[in-house]
Amino acid sequence: MPETFKPQSQEGNPEQFPAQEEIRSVFETILQGKEYKEVRVLSNEGGVYVYEIEIVLENGEKILYIYQKAKNDYRDKSLPDSAQFSASIHTMELDGEGIPCGGTTVANYLDGKWEYVS
Image (cartoon, rainbow, N blue to C red; front, side):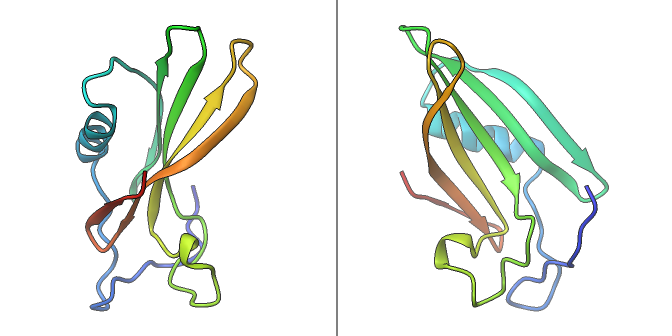
């Protein structure tokens, strides 16, 4: 994944992104013991930029939990507050046929800290 900008933390140092193990730990915190399956992990020299896991509900519906690095300059103050994070975890709800039917932001990452939002 080519990076179009060099993320800088508030102190002027490059943003440090979480390792795969830390992201997995955050997933496990969010899921509180629910079983999950790793779906996809994409990384490059900058580390993990996409990490997806899936849980299957009793009714056959699924929920994807998706970690993704920001693709834009998240320090741009013209962006809405909801876009000013270096990485986030979102959900995508899939019905029994695999069709997306909802989703939400679960956690945001900035300057080495996670903020849980739902």
